[in-house]
Image (tube, rainbow over all chains, first blue to last red; front, side):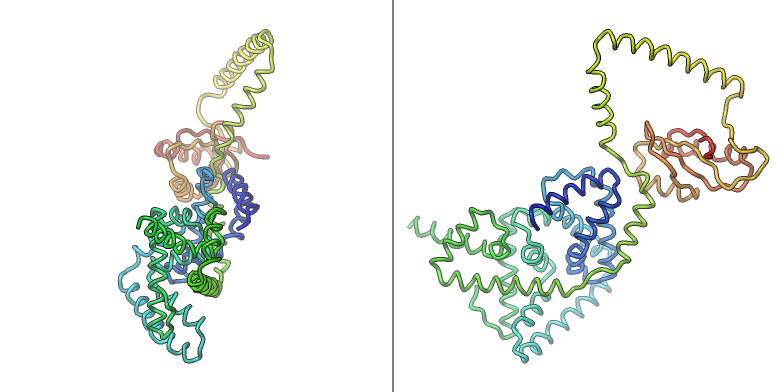
Length: 189
Length: 228
């Protein structure tokens, strides 16, 4: 995100705090896809993710006057989104979670092999990224896709900065193990 | 020995920063440290390339997730509309106070004294007028519409209890098929339109009684003049 956009996000939040609906539309248009993808990777259900992003932005509307600008607006929104996603996961019935977990396991155990037969290393890597635990997926996404610094990840996830680095290391280590199991040796760690 | 362990720690630290260096989110100082290490360490370069592969595929994976449907936005703005008029405007009172103090600070003490006396006189006159009207018409609420014709809505000026949450107020209004049509004015007063079906006087009495029984939500109410 550019410095200009960061500034205008803050300006938008200032307007939203005064009840400016148009500013809310601009902020939504600018960020809703990324927030949706972040939530979807955590909850794994598009319909639930859609409901949750409406709630995230409604919270932004309600709390805009309390935004102090100590972090980027996108960081603040991802922290709200993460809280909503984890709350939704806690509320879901066990059977539903079990079904989804079973589907995920089935997908990942078959597909890397199929993809490897096609000699598509990138596809295998993506399959392995999907097989990571929610905790590891989250940190990989925040660093690589959402372009969050160590400090920002610490703020979103609510852990110390050193733990952010350690968790990222273990997420990448797990990814290497999954790749190795799928027949790709990276020579690291 | 110490130097060797310091060097190993430094190497480990640099390696842990590679994901953020690939994403371009390191501070300039840290980015320069990583660049210096990369310039002289081929193994680190190889590992950095692994990081770059991970980064590229993470982006690819996320981009393939698609986007939410228009339903998300519709749901959001329907919720905003439901509570829209209740949106607090924190800057308002601060601005007003600042403006008033700026206005008065520009006056000389003597001018201020005259202005205060004049204001006190105006308040006395207003009080007299209002008292006169109240005595003539009797205390209580009056409706602006004809008393024997059924109406389908009534407007009241309402003040909500500051501790009542937006959700509680929204629920309260929804339960009474009421909506905010104007406000907030002055001291947080809203003009609220209530759907009714009977004679204005009876409906008004019923509404006022209802609002008075909900002092956890509504702190005061009075009839709004009919709009032209």
